[in-house]
Length: 298
Image 1: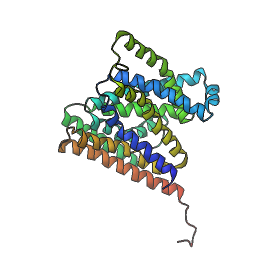
Image 2: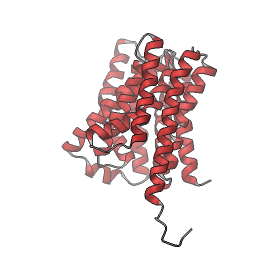
Image 3: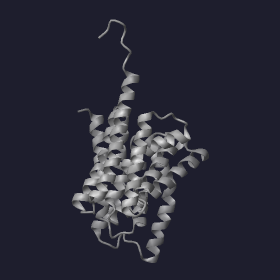
Image 4: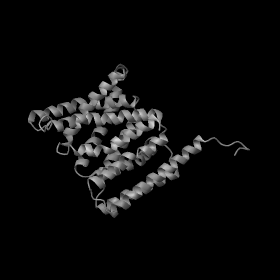
């Protein structure tokens, strides 16, 4: 197994295990957790850029226009992080996994409406089946699966903005988190000033975990960046479902969240849509990549 594939598996495994980490911090406000995640992630990313001699190139590329693009990305990823951490600690891990199962199909719709990309019949069918699954879950739940749709929507839109952004993934992430750094730092000092901050008041164990939020954010991103350079998109496309699958298993079998046969039907529709989406995409790539046989071949 190649190094790139191992890096990809490592990234998605870590993302899949995130609920276990955030549950350890369930007594801390999600807003404070995101504040620590931003502050410590930014510091670790800066150290990485300095250590890999990319900082000068990163700094010279920064402009007002670039900051405008990445500010939008910052708001989207910040909102996504807050919702995700809150949902995990509020007992909605299964629904968060649904959001990341839906995300690739939402990317297709954004590509169609924003970039005017043509969708093949199989892709439209995948979207229709996934939509029927969401509608079914809405009817049976008695409510719209808002957490899942919010996570899928913010992350898909975040991906759209990143597609327009010129920096490398690591440099781009450093800038977008850097734009949130000062507000996050001010927020944490405000909590410190009014005596409501958990950090330095809840024990050394929790303090280490809050600092570690930066590490667990940065490491899978670095692994993913390495994998993206070496691994074909078809393989990454399969690996990406590791994370929500692990989250789903954690929610059902470790946290014992409610998951009856009614919800299973809705999830199965989404899984069927994803399987059809992957098979159709794989077939389309084979048609493009494989050469047309010459007469007399085969």
